[in-house]
Image 1 (cartoon, rainbow over the protein chains, first blue to last red):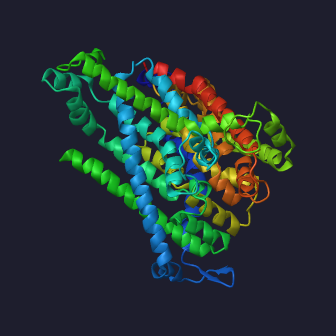
Image 2: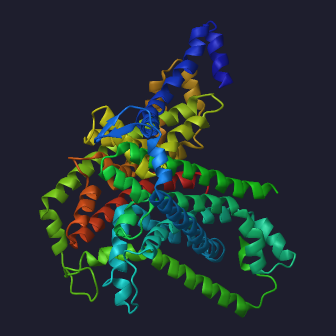
Image 3: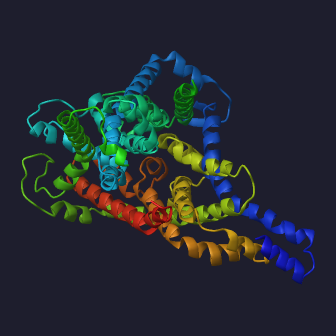
Length: 293
Length: 277
C-alpha cells in the first residue's frame, strides 16, 4: 500500500486534503443502509411498543394518554402472576433439561466419534432446523396424539395437550442448538490439556468432568439462555401442543391481541423483554463470574 | 488428535462398554430430534385420513389436495414472493454493510455488527407485535412489502455472516490500492469485492430466502390479506384436521433443506476450506 502511495507522490503533486479525506468520509455512507434499516424497522417499532404500553385503552380505542394502568393491572390480577411464574418455571427447567440432554451427546460426538464422521452427524441433527418451527411443532402432534406414533408403539400415555407435550416439542428443537454450541466449545479445548491430564493419571471420566466440562461453561450459559428465551417467548408450541391446557405468559399476550387491547399486550411484552434481559445478565454472570474465580 | 485413542489406566472392555452406552445414547437423541420430521414426511404419503398407525398404503392424495386448495396455493405464491423480497433486500444491505466493515478504520466497528444483529435476537412474538404496531400507526399494515421490510431486519444479520465469512482472509491490498488511485467505492465494490465473494452473495440470497419462506410468528401478526404458507397452514390447523398439512410441511421442509444445503455448498464449504479446515 505504501508503495502505491509513494509511486503516486512521485508522479504527481501531493494530493489535496479533500482528496485524501474523501474516501474516509464517504465510506461512512456505506454503513447507512443497515443502520437506518434496523432503526426504522426494528428499533422504532420496539420503542413504539414501549410507548404504547403506557397508552390508554377506552371503548376499544387506543388513545395517547399516559397511564400506568396497564402495568398496575398486571400486579393486581393474580392470573398474570400465575402465568408468569408458570412460564418462568417451564423455561428454566427446559433450559436445564436441554443442557443435561445435550452434554453427553456433544461429549460423545467431539471425543468418541472419528473426526471425519463428525460433520455428518452434525448435519443430521441440524436437518430439522430447516423446517419451519410451526411445521415441526405440528409434526409433534402426529407423534404425541392419543392415536399417534408413541401410543401406537404400545405406550399408553396422554402427551398431547399437556405441559409434557410442550416440553418435548420445544426440547427437540433446542437440543440441536445446544449440542452445536457445546460441541464447538469442546472442540476448542486444547488437546494438550487432555493429554496432560491423562499423563498425570486421570481416568476418562475425570478428564470429561474435571477438564472438559469446566471449559464449556460459557457455551452452557448461552445454550441455556437460548432455551430459556425461546421457551418464554414461544406461542406456537404452546398453542399447537398445549391446546390451551397450559396457560402460559405468551398466551396472555395473544389473548390481549385477540381482544385488540394493544396497550395491554404491549405492557406484557415489555415485562417479557425485561425478564429475558435479566436472564441474559444472570447467565453471563454465572458463566463468566465463576471462570475468573 | 492421536490422544483421543489413548485411554490411560482403564481396561479395554470397560472402555468399550462405556463407549457403547454413549453411542446408544447418541442414537436415542438423534431419534428424538428426528422423530417429528420423519413422522410428518411418512404420514404425508399415508393413505389414511388420520395421521396414525397402522400404515394404510402409499398415496400422493394429500399433495393433490394441497394443489387443489386455493387458499394454500395462494399462500405458497405469497410465500415465494415474500421470500424473494426478503432475500434481495437483506442480501443487498448485508453486502453494503460488509463492504463498510471491510473498508472503515473506525475502531468500534463491531458496534455496527451488534446493532445489525440485535433484531435477530428479539423473541419473534415481541418483534411481531412491535412491527404490527408500527405499521398500524403509519397506516401501512397488511401488505406483503411491509412484511418483507420487517423480516429483512432478521435476514440482514444472516446475509452479513455468510458474505463476511467468504471475505475473511481475502487480501484487502488491491482495494486499498484502487482507492488510493482514485477509484470510487462503487467501483471497488463491484469490480474487486463482488467478484471475490459472489458465492457468498449467492449463499446469502439462498439463506435469507429461507428466513422469509419459513418465518411464521411475525407474518402471523403482520399479514392480513396476503397470508403466507405458514400462516395459512396455521389458520387451517385451527379448523379441520387434514393430512394435507403433512404434505405442506414436507414441501416446506425439502424446499428449505435444498436451499440451505445449496447455500452451504456454494458459500460456506469453500470458505471453510480456505480457512484451512
